Image (cartoon, rainbow, N blue to C red; front, top):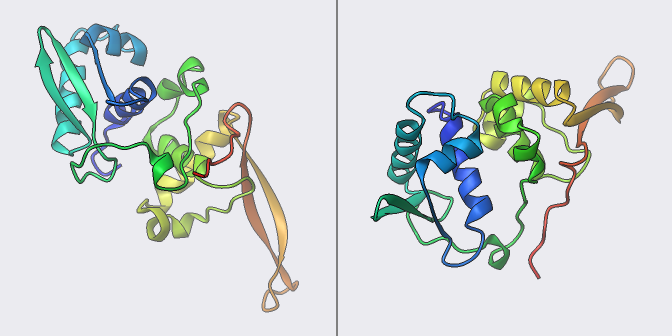
Length: 195
């Protein structure tokens, strides 16, 4: 978020979708990545893809090497430690980003705030709360980022909101309205718990 790298995030998410089994690596021409991201109309799409891979490598999220004329990308642990990637099912709960994100062109229809909030929402149970003022404390996002993300997801029909009364003895009416959010299909999937 802090580096405003929406394309890098999409490229990283796409790499996870493709390199989903050991050895967690993938190699395609830059033109294939550009086409998958829907940026083939940009004159320097190949260069943009290369720059995003380089940035992701500096963040220790991937490792890459040249194999002929192709760049082979190997996933590293998502915490930025540079350690080898392992499937999160071995370590606990995880979530999946549905292919509908790509098929519905949401990667080009959402800004970075909406993408960040979508990833958070996918990690939570249905009818979750996400107070905008808690975004920084809970997820390292600004209040404005959470607000923009929630608004965009609702406008795109990805997220529903319901206001549910909650006891609040010190409130004038004895209750307050709590906003609860639910993802809509096809994004409504449960978090997976490892055995």
